[in-house]
Length: 218
Image (cartoon, rainbow, N blue to C red; front, side, top):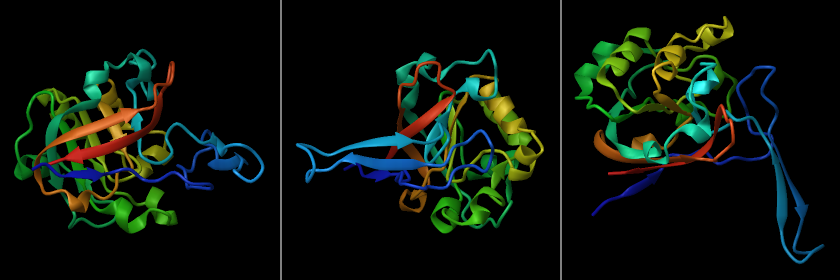
């Protein structure tokens, strides 16, 4: 019998977001309660890349697909979860590392499990010293024609590259129509191997990205 794991961070008021001037602080306000009205209602304000989210190709590629242009079937698919839990801060996951963990198939959704979100989300170091993919690993994924790659860290690139306005992994993957799933969590609960991924984002018109509820079936 299949088991399901929720790999999604909960969104909450004042939740940390990537430290960049184009990201807003998270605000969640209850605008009506059961005590002062006939129902409860809330208003939300957060970046398109806060919490567990999907990066559409348009995030880094001006001519890339926007979120609402990605066929919905691409957000549900089979793939493989590979574990790199023994890596430390700023660890690079290379093409050789991925080859040594298993086989990639055309159309796969690859999930790289590092344990980073579970150990460091909410800390300053979460956005500064995350594990990341190497440029060569991204190139290999392009060659293998996978559909998407996800990681339980805030970004697929090294934080140093992003701080220097470089994003080689994003540009390689998104530039070839491979979308990203970032800030996953709870991946230790999923055995390494073949999986099915459900990663449905909010349907934002002309979106560069959006929050997604990500569930892994194994």
